Amino acid sequence: MATIDEIARRANVSKTTVSFVINGKPGVSEATANLVRAVMAELDYVPSVLAQRFASRRSLAVALIAQSYPSVFHDPRHAEIVDAVYSTLEDRDYSLVLGTSNKRFLEERRHIKILRSGQVDGLLLLEPTLDQDYLADLAEQNAPVVIINGEGCHLGLAAVRTNDTVVGRIAAEHLLSLGHRRIGFIDGGRSHQSAIDRALEFQRLLALAACPLDPRRIFHGEINTSEITGRDGCRAILEHMPDTTAIFCCNDTMALNALDAAREMNVDVPGRLSLLGVDDHPTSIACRPQLSSIRQPSYDIAKEATEMLLARLQAPRNGDHQPVTRLLPPALVPRDSTAPPAR
Image (cartoon, rainbow, N blue to C red; front, side, top):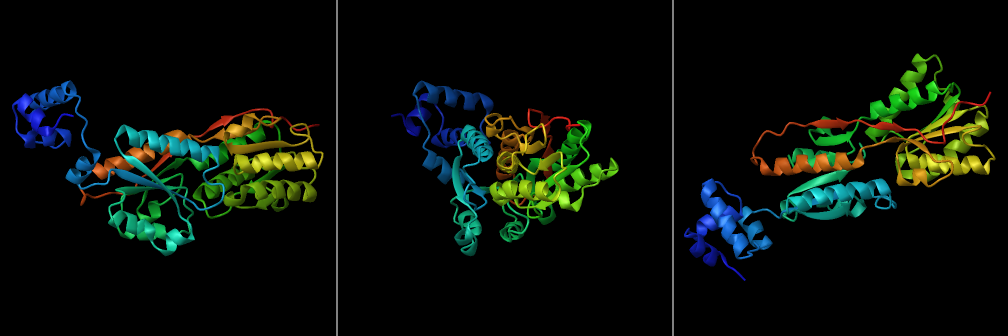
């Protein structure tokens, strides 16, 4: 196996020059760097990852910390996010570490420890809730952190997420355009900014269209318990307001479970009831009827968040890092579960 000494002799340069080229440090002319790279290729030299980490004083690893709830990594949308993060890191020779913000993680303040110990260089936080105190910890430390599909600008943390105000707008416009006026809503709670933004805009547009949401057609649930929320929400709305012709669900998991509840109640979808979800979950096309949904660009969000974090890791450590929130656009995917209301 070729060594740095051998590369230096063959290229007629110093070992320091070879080391600078391998580790991407400045101070070497482009011509010399190209010569060294050509010799490395000729000798089939593969740099030691450990040596690179030692030289750069970095772990060349990033942790993706997800919320702690049972199905967090079972959700196909989250699998898509992990795939985007992993692929983006792999292209830059970074490793990925997975974790969840469970009770032990928070009590032991592992979010601070793994950064201080050098186990990882930065953190990607997957959909943290607004009430998680460890976000403030990270903000106080000026830690290299980017939030995926969440909000942290109020704390000084960067984030990339779906424009959820537009999600609420699309949902209202779609159901109104079909002719629905007796519309229900299964809410996602107040612990996620995404759920708050969707609810506010959805209700605002219905009010502007002179058909404000009747409180009896609203079921207040939680995104973290979407399976139960979807089933219970659909039942409650139809039992209290059986003339409801459409329900907007805060995500696809809620909508799919609402569809099951409607079947159990012998309510035809979409003949008697239209259902609309959010995410464009892969199972949306596996059910019957296929679920109308609002697609989140999950892969693009995760990729951009990872690139944002890597850019910060390459910037000066004492640089001024202004909090940035980037919003990516959603898109309506109409399918069979929404239709004009029956006469």
